[in-house]
Image (cartoon, rainbow, N blue to C red):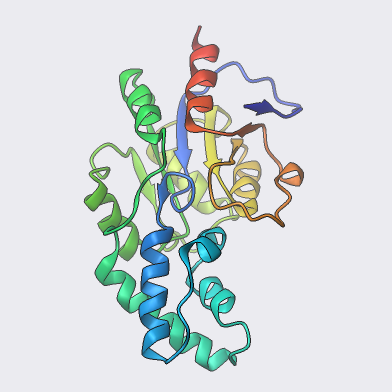
Length: 230
């Protein structure tokens, strides 16, 4: 874990919020499987999971553009709609929690630290995925991309989540693997933690993102929480 310089003095973390894709759950296998089904329908070449994994946090259209960058926008849109149609059918089939996340969630449960999700994924995909993974009951809040009028990096979904778990924003650690996640945390006055285990591309510059911590594994988060509570 790396702690960035910050103006705010951290005395305690009372709640933890997660981005979903690429932070809490490895959803790339589902997304790429749905993408390949759509590509096949349009007689396009399939793509490998390894090639597309780093794009998975950026949404369905980004996946299509990465797979078929030379298609015109109308064809890319058709491919995207096919991806979403197939994704609704296989959502959760291949996804799994990142290594160490179960241990982190168990620590939060044991110490009665509320936690939840703020994601840009639409609710029609978020809720079924959490149901498949058995996470719906334990979440103190689940804010999806269409839960408010705005999505990250806007403050609206962040503030809604804070309200629902009844915790001041300055005492919430928000974990994410994309720049918009850390911008959202910063905009909302939350503590930002970069999830380096997520879908961070080789051309990304996470050292420039506004953040308080850089975590290389979920265990690093457990160790921070334990340190702050001792």
